[in-house]
Image (cartoon, rainbow, N blue to C red; front, side):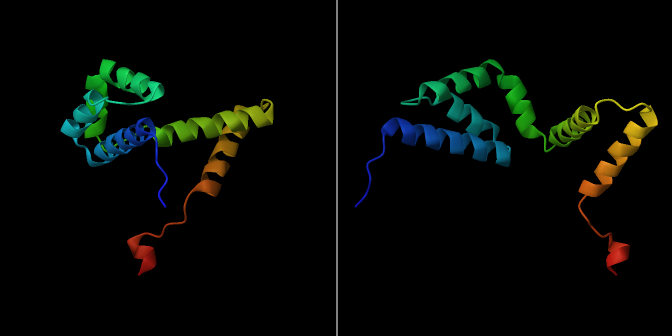
Length: 117
């Protein structure tokens, strides 16, 4: 026995998955296709697509690049958390030392080719 899904939910899900797939595969034509194919979508998805359309050039440029500012944002968040929990360091060098210590704790343990041999 199958459950009948709402057409709005189904088409919204398909549009979301299509856009995510196109972004992952750097498919500009696919992105444009999904942005302008807005039949039977939820209000929230239509608003999101409207924002993407108004920034279409930026979205397409971002889809070309394999780089992201995510790692830098993560570092900024870590530094702000250290500052927040420390309630201010008396010495700036202590803050820098704490940041370096935290970064070495969270780095993945990857071996270079020379170490692996």
